[in-house]
Image 1 (cartoon, rainbow, N blue to C red):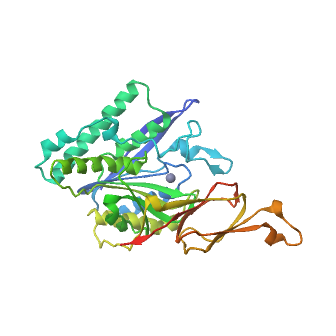
Image 2 (cartoon, rainbow, N blue to C red):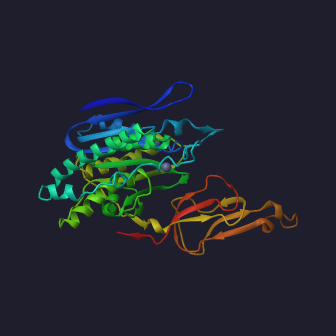
Image 3 (cartoon, rainbow, N blue to C red):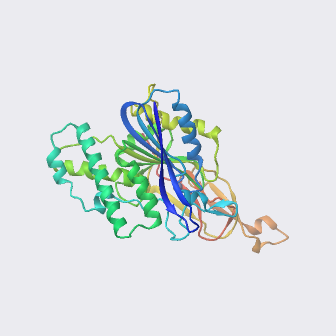
Length: 375
Ligand SMILES: [Zn+2]
């Protein structure tokens, strides 16, 4: 197996230093290519433990294919500390979410795919895929070149475009994130719903074929456009290129012990892709459409005693939390005078909760999946 490492200059700082991305690539025998990156949101660091352990495990395995690893994929976000916390989700200068400035390269360049389809309509899928990857690589190169010449690259664009360029010829993209305080879950495009269960993460959010600026969408939308263009030209394509966002628990935590289970998810996906030997496992997924990924905003301010944790399911009418408002405190009846119980309005599974127990009115208290279905 062959390892390579390269540094990509990412951003000059006022004080003169330059932030770099370090990209590691491992190459085995012929096979698919998978791109894995972590910590685009700076506080979401468990993916780095997963990458570390995966690289360790690959030392003794036979790999058919190649993998790119980009740990700490957003150094500016990683380094942005406020007190004891990492302010890594938004760029503090522009306010932009670090995972929302990727591009749908086909739409961004107003590319009409009908000509590509016409020219390649009779080729076997593997050849079409090979040629389309080259087509995409050229497209993003010229797109970046044009923006650079016109001085139109904002900080978030640059990080996102460099990562997207590194990933654009992949057969699989895994963007490793975490929630605030969260269970393990993942986002999968509709056309990859049945593949997602090979990642062995039970909570699966199924996202529509629409572009919202995130890495997973930027990685699968060119293939969705290709599928549609071929469909118009009269050919059905079963696309074997996927992109997933994996949410590995809570932010601000890094655990190699937890990574032991986390890394199995990726090893199994690599087995599914034919890149590693061994039995491919699958689990029964708990699916929810993105439209049923609900946020429960705190109806009042106060101190929260959470009664349901991420990963727990609940029924309609069950107690989710008690919120205490100490300004209402009656010394004759301290608890009853201050407590407001919060009940579930429908059944679901808790995915995320607000990391603090001190909340203002209107904060995102819980995120939950509802209308859950199984395969
Ligand atoms: Zn994230």
